[in-house]
Amino acid sequence: MIEMDLRKSNGQIILAHSRWDKDKKNVYLSQVLDLINIPLNLEVKESGFEGELLRAIKNVSSSVLISSKYPSILQKIRALDENIKLGLVIGKGNFFLLPFVARLDRSINLYSVHPKMFLSNSWVIRFLKDLGKKIFVWTINDPNKFTKLEKLGIDGVFTDRPDLIKR
Image 1 (tube, rainbow, N blue to C red):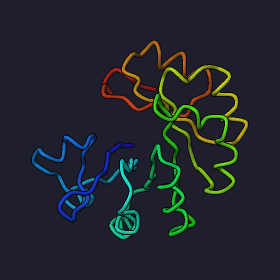
Image 2: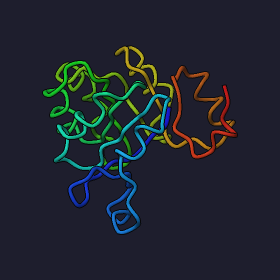
Image 3: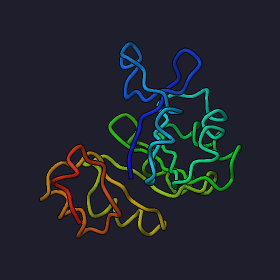
Image 4: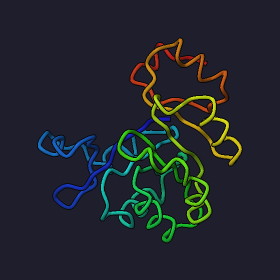
């Protein structure tokens, strides 16, 4: 799966990790969708283009997972599409959401939860597995950490080094 961070700039959906990336040469989502033929995780970094995103991916041949750290974005997307796979990103800025994942899941039907490495202990993994959610941990670039997490039952990781992280 390829993960791409999405924002909107000048009326277009762009690939941008942070708001400062907007000042660089923009790469538009529409430019890459036709080039990629493997599953995608599209992380929405800001609100306001949920409907446009769903229209953009409507005819994509590969499977798509939309994720965000903002439950409100996921709720908007769920209201527009009852079948799209949704993932909740949990990190330092929103770790307080972890105890509320079950409640959020009832309202938006999460496919997966994406905890940051520091949250990925055996208790958290077991809790999320008991909810029936896929677990994708970020960002894992160390093969030993990957092996440890794999033994705990995660479903995958986000990595900057796919050459080092192999199943």
